[in-house]
Amino acid sequence: MFVEQEIKIGVDDRKRLEAIARSFRGARALSRNVKAVLLAANGLHDRDIAKQLRVSRVQVRQWRNRYAKTGLDSILDRLPDGVGGAAAAVQSPDSRGDAEASPAILPDPDPSEHPEAPSVGKKDLPRSDFLQVMRERGFAADCTDSQGLETALRSGVVSGYIGFDATAPSLHAGSLIQIMMLRWLQKTGHRPIVLMGGGTSMVGDPSFRAEERPLLEPESIRTNIDGIRAVFMRFLDFGDGPSDAVMANNGDWLGDLNYLDFLRSVGRHFSVNRMLGFESVKSRLDREQSLSFLEFNYMVLQAYDFAELSRRYGCALQMGGSDQWGNIVNGIDLTRRLHNAEVYGLTSPLLTTASGDKMGKSAGGAVWLNSEMLSSYEFWQYWRNVDDADVGRFLKLFTELPVGECEILGALRDSEINDAKIRLANEVTSLCHGEDAARDAESTAAEVFRKGGVGDGLPTLSLSASDVGDGISVAQILVRSGLASSGKEARRLVAGNGVRIDGSLLTDAGLLLDRKALASPVKLSAGRKRHALVTLAS
Image (cartoon, rainbow, N blue to C red; front, side, top):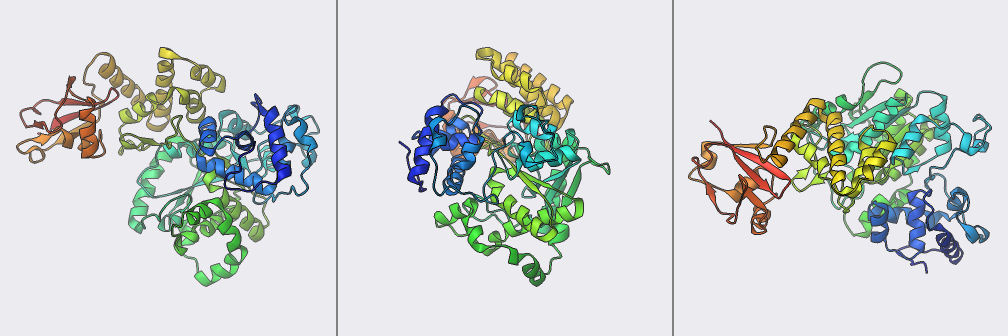
């Protein structure tokens, strides 16, 4: 029976869900948001659904809430032939949806809804290259109007943007899915707009955060933007051509706003009741955690960004992670009201690893994209060491290898999957750091792991004579080199026989290394896959 978790489902809708679920088994063509609802109908809990679909529990809860509130007609309308069975005969007396607040699953385009599209069957209808790539490679989660966006993409160059707040001097691997969406947008003939949050970074996005972000000073924000700009220079071609990328900064228009004028012209279009209903806000309030007025204004500012980009650049598409759905819908509504423009939203799944960890984090901390914050070798190693179950999916998302090749590599097993991981590491590192950096990283890894050598590309901790003094403990070195996040973790690694010095097992975390011991480089290893060189500065 269907398990009612946190939300109320009508009896008729519940029967329809159960009927669909019975015929759902083996239906691989369904979108993940539909699968989540159907799996819930089979009695699975959120954590099990999240693990099976490789998404976060927050995402699962969003999907269930969405369809519970809007009814199930939108699901039945988009089920593949043969799926749904008797469920289609069960009619819901109060099934209704709000097109503004509810996402559209990404179905095949329907020419009946767009007369200008060729009058051919669904299977023969030409798709835009961009959305085809988004579907095939796993970037697409929800779209506000997939048929309308298809038509716009086939009609000419579409400008689309993603916003990035400047909260650090670099983006990390968790942002790579959005960067690749912009890259594919340009590669398929459209114009990507990178929006730097020079203004919104002074507020901070509260979406699904447990506490308020620390406020940043303007100078720190400018420094961070410079670092993030360097990342995009490797992925996008900037210029003045029709499909050349544009980098904008919302500080250019948010910084000079008159508060009273803004309230009168923009604020009047926002319903506080509706804003409180968005999951990103509701989840925070349900946990009885404070949401400041400053943070509450963030979604208004982001919505205004879309309207301003539409006015300045003719931007018609906003993309982002699924946690940005409410902000995107707000922006679409405001842009239509202010400029009477037809605009769209497209979200990507919230990405987690097969083990359920958040994408972009490693045992040593964030996987930064800038080589100044994380060496090319460490970056390469992150991708080389991903879970076997993630290889095929990551190849599709983070490389430009053909989809068929990604699937073949992802299907390898046992020792052969290591070759696929090396291919993944080389491809991603080449995109982010350059081909030379990828070759050097692979060469260093081969020397370290296969030949037992030191390797010139290993991360290096250089200690001064004053740092060493009469001796520095291995636990301190583990922390300073990034191999452990704290002294407690360092001692735990040593106690678990996980630390080696020049290949020899270390059993005493308090062992002191003096200047004589560091006269030549020392190779420190935490586990089998993380290594660092420790040297004494001359």
